[in-house]
Image (cartoon, rainbow, N blue to C red; front, side, top):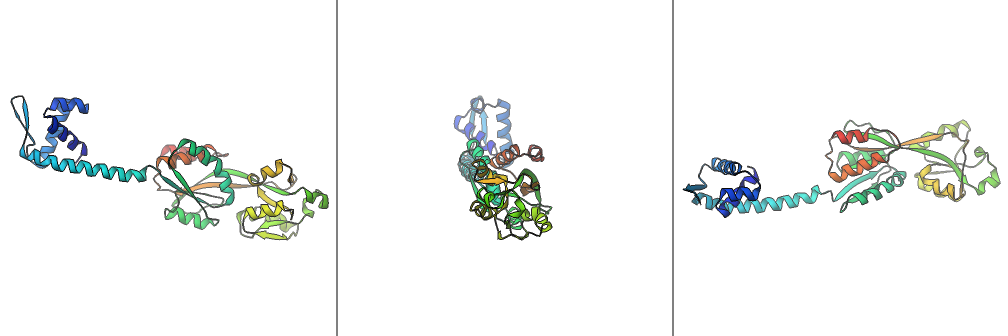
Length: 297
């Protein structure tokens, strides 16, 4: 039953005039009459009787008013309760890499300017399977990762191509000169997506890193402490290059890494989620099809 039928019924019962009720509801008189008739057919009783030009509510109609008021009150409570969830009070985002946090920060600032009363929960998961699991079990609404995902239930759109730079503290140049391959190397552990990008160049020159870390932030700190050369995303070292703390070896092999957003293919986007994804698409530095996908769903 359309809840609006009960709203119309209660107003007609209160006013006792179909024409006046139609005016208040911004309906035509025949529409209000048809709605009352629909209710009468639903219950199989007369709700109003017309004597001359006067409208009288029947005993059945009087009995229905009590239940109609309760139903409308309950409907209002249900609507308010459900809307606590549909108003996007929280978006859950998984980050598959520390660099993704730097990539996401300016997007989140813009998001906060567009959408109010919505929080974004960030969880770091430096293992791709953990990020994918979060998408599949709905622990994450979306995630930013740096590796390919092979799962038919997960959609993936590349959003950022990030340069990987070969950098070292400028003080090391006084000791080793500008020949990068003479310097000690700091690397991520074997198996990381970054390491696979440059590992072949180290092997070709039989270079064994003097230090290995499990995350890029640790590598950055080691490089800043002057312990050796590191291969790091540009976004992590840009400020240090600008202030002269670090030196970039521009004759080194050119490396890039893709960052992508993933989400469940059957995910129903709330307005805030869609806004955040559109901002990610707008800030992407590659043409990835994410905007077209969002506009088509």
